[in-house]
Image (cartoon, rainbow, N blue to C red; front, top):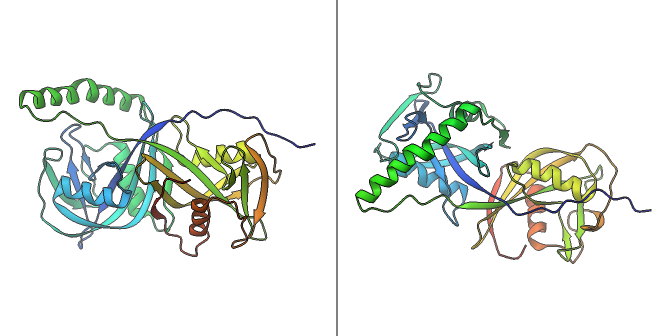
Length: 319
């Protein structure tokens, strides 16, 4: 008799995605801005624009807010902040300055290079944690962190949205300038590359997709991608997995969508199928089934690469 796991229908949800730049100069000092909205110190950063990759986004944000041209050299961490209504995911990059001059902006009227071991006050805990995580990060794989969203932070966000941001819009209206444009909302999916003791990778023949794919699926509300990969893998295969690292981030041309691919190890060995996964199979690299998803094959190749650096790629619409 074929075993099965319970099935729930996923409704597509969308979250905000942004970047943070941890810029360290030749003297080991950290570039910070003092934000015009919260009046707190923070590293430069902001939301991704449509069709923009995270490495390009962090370069743009640093220059817009500080006048400094920067080179992202390492993805140090991915931080999920469960801010209503759907959460905010931040890619935190270690960066080096490559030119430009410190130039304040309306969003960052005050700028400074400060000693990295003497962070100024006031600074939000979420900013402090991201800075400290990036400064102490030594692995090639980025940190994957879910940060708490405290009651005090909820109150502060409410005040920002209903008070300060509303006042900014009124000022723009009086000046006959453009109103604030909300950040792009991104659909997210996450997939797992799982190998057995022989090195073969687990693939599923998904009934609603018509081909072999890596286990995974769409994210749910207030869910970081690494939790999506765990939940969707269990849902489709019955396997409980532990995430090891983020190997790739993939964006679809012309769509507000980001797919994450993780390597993972199995915590239990009972493989099952259900109505969504008609068949499961273990395939060695180079011996995948003919009717497999080409984008998923390329993602698996990236994940099995000897390099531990997270790749960022644009893909065609076909998934």
